[in-house]
Image (cartoon, rainbow, N blue to C red; front, top):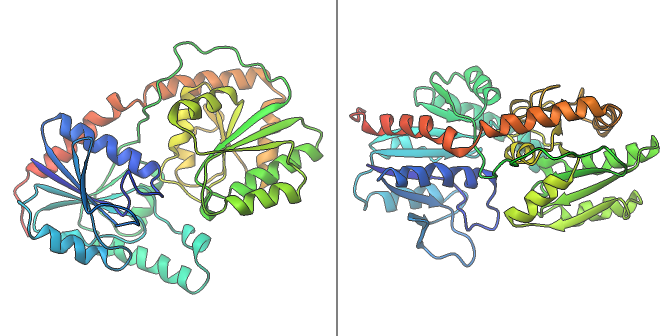
Length: 368
């Protein structure tokens, strides 16, 4: 069978992230099963029009406002596909109305408040309205999402058929859960794209709060992005140069090393589809403390594999960090539970049911 993924970014995009890593895992499994796979994405400076990536044919064309027309024009010249995966990132591809084959809507999160992270009023309100209207328009199209949080919002937006498959990880859990005493300084880590919706500034401010409360902490920030300079300036303004280290982007092995070394991973995003780096941290024996937002409350089970803060503030984050720091027994329990849960979220366990479902959709006779 032939599958097409429509996604605004591909693996070589300079702003590629977790969504693309997850997409690659599913498409690679479909190829392993003997299927043919294409991936259509936005163009970007220096990109080639077409190339092969791990046996996936990557095709690029257009950008915001033009990619849909480019995709349609390219699509009409292709051998028919059995299933088109229309991946939404705020703006969909409207594939069910032009692909003339089976289609599924793939969505990691409903952006909602994320619109306000990038756009001021009234554009942010228009974005929210457009997103909700889109879901209503797609209400009879089957949806695929990684979290119960996203499923609940989609139901509120009139979507009728929603299938939840949690994301898996490629990080191999530690063979043995080695001891990690809570000796000072408490090691905190943030692994994130430095963009407004990730609110990395909240994690930085929580360090200041912790120091004011007498805690001895050190934070490592792993990642890069448009807010990097702003975050560096904040660290200097708060006088935290000796307490916070920027590593830049790291390869998978070095990132896992940072996760393994840390006592806690912090996640302060506005909203997520799942929270891939949380499970990756868990595999390295590191629990997470997260904000009470969609996606993060799915990847972290409160008081079992980590903590969900009482509010979306640096002060609430500091409260939860101190709660763990003062209870070695609780910390050991969180670590063990998180590590064990990560074993059930390996790709070899996650992919089969999801790809079985995709194959079943592709095999259905198409009806308008």
